[in-house]
Image (cartoon, rainbow, N blue to C red):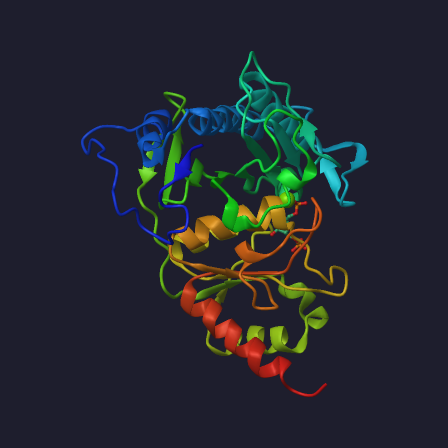
Length: 355
Ligand code: AHM
Ligand code: MG
């Protein structure tokens, strides 16, 4: 079984890849070179990451022409399992990722925000895959109609069940610390794929002229501190006392407020510029809105691997949470370590006060 030598590490690779400095390194080349980081690698994980890269290019093409074609808009008024309106591009992105993963047979089952339950992937030939993949095909999809960035988020786990039999839901209900790889694709002013296999974080920008993701952000490191906070402040009156006090403090300290309404975009900005992203409990979503397994865990792994912190508002590390169900929601506070620590102090101080 492939063992990730750096799976528990939190930060920069101790053995940087020997990459050519004077020419373009494509995602495929990088993934193949990185395979050497895994003992007994069979190429399955490499294949999975490449499948996701292909799906990302296809989704990117559609997202870019969303304003031009009739695909734009709500898909027959359909709602997904969580009661959110589905956009047509959600459905399209979901189908394309499933197709790409299905064709290669590099994983044995998948779970998506857009599907109620897990999907078994038939094995291709005699291949018995040991991986399961979870994803949110198009996060922040309410932004599509207004030409604002959206993203794809993915997480890869090693299955726990017997590889001879079918995968089951327990293969997905694993702590985020067990992720073998995680990443996102941001369809923004340019399209970038960022991923980690537990050995640091790297970003690849799509060069549309050659149709390849090219290494553009080597060994990404989140700034220790930041000047921006990212939260839907419209829900201020529905936050708990400690969160209201923290938000007041951000304002008192003249932190800038940035909130795109697309978690991938907000997290990407924070990775590069520093800051904190919050989705606390509100009256509408007492357990938080975002989904633990395919939104919070993969982004928490990325941020931790870049040197940041990811906790819930009960101050538990996101990656140590025990999932109980596929579409479970959780509260989040993710970002620069100093800012998350400042929030932690507020929560400890104000939650200790008598009601
Ligand atoms: P989605 O998966 O239905 O698109 O919802 C997730 C998105 C996040 O990307 C974003 O941070 C959040 O929902 C915004 O929610 P709100 O409009 O309540 O602030
Ligand atoms: Mg989502």
